[in-house]
Image 1 (cartoon, rainbow, N blue to C red):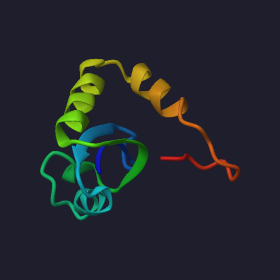
Image 2 (image 1 turned 135 degrees about the horizontal axis):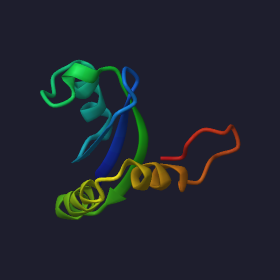
Image 3 (image 1 turned 90 degrees about the horizontal axis):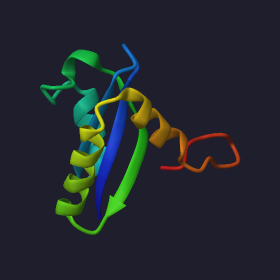
Length: 91
């Protein structure tokens, strides 16, 4: 399983969009400051993810989301996710 994911910085509320195979490991790398592009804005929280059968599918979706450019489109995508009974985000 492969993933496209969106992280939100707890430091400045910015978003980071990425794709990977092991999402838990990748988030840990981001929060340990081992990813150059996100190190400055740690800590990060996962706010959205999608599953894909192939890495190419996940990367294609990542590129599509990044092409939107406007923050409101990303926020609408995050809000569109179904919430569970506890009010948490189902990702």
